[in-house]
Length: 485
Image (cartoon, rainbow, N blue to C red; front, side, top):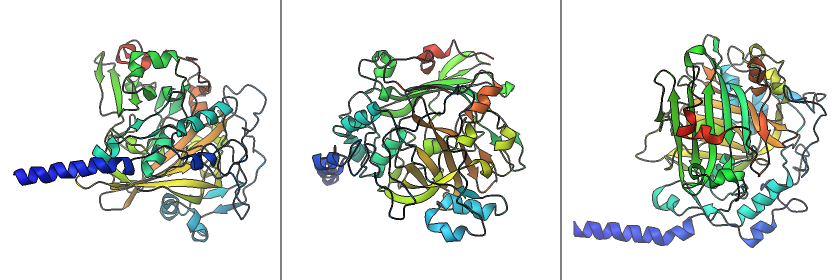
């Protein structure tokens, strides 16, 4: 027994000695020199500034596209409405393009040969932000690193970060770094919107789940922010992301609401749930935890696919491989989904979303893959995430079951919102290849906003404290005043 304990102690000591080498480190001066707003090899977000050799991907521009004049409270005009598809990929010709398709897209062609198609358009690199977002990223990248506790105990956290936001790892060396950059990708600092988390069964019957969503990203707020100073948001090295969903429809679930936050040093979603029938608030550790069902999804998706890849808790259950970059046809500039007059019936088909509304473009994409650790349990043996190189926004997702079969596939439909100058999801799909059902997160914000008389999403993109709603909704005390049937 003594010999065994000595061996264990020696192993721990050796492990601790290796940690500084294995753990993430801040970027070197040479790496930082590659990043910049103008005139550098890489953009501030770490994307390749130049276009590709074939000319099918253009060079990146640092200035966001100019907005179309007018009031966009209910709809967002398409700045590329005159674009026509360059070509269409179908089940008959997809093999010609296979090297630029995701595994999920190929599976969709095989599963739905009559209805699934991809209209491919000219590539428009609209992923740009206001200068302060770039400056915050360049400042953060000089300091931040993945914590030593990742190697020591598999814990999800960051160290040496600074207030004010920024993409932490614009030049990712590990899959964990890439996943972090996706998680905190810039979506503004607060958002208040309606969304439809539609549930479509194998017969094509749909249930619309209309949800009021309030979100805040304290990670992107300045150090002297009033929100950051509040105890609930300042704990555990500071809150990263705070989320609250309140069900409006269907009536049987109306008034159900949760709120909570993730933290830099405690990634478990610290959520509380108000149940109208019980008239009480309870802690809800199941919300946002690994392979627990996503809120309002009827058990058809797990939180692992949130933002197209999600850690799921404070301790990793998957080993995340080194990120690779590929040129792929991915959903991009999906402005057709931002017209409030495009009805839910038009968006949601019986088998999948209406592919005539989805715009695909050729982009460089970061790809990471997580493989279940030995001795760990999870619904997904493997899962893959795809992130846009210009914004770090999620683009696609795949999950494999315990037998290694491709099980669930997803895509996220983003659009650049001019005005606040942010790239956010305006729709998505996650489809179960086995049971034929599909779901969406509560997106379609313009349509849901019109139905509920709320209007379009209200997005703030300032690093200052501009509260569009009472942030108490993210706390157990604040939830009590919001819960009602």
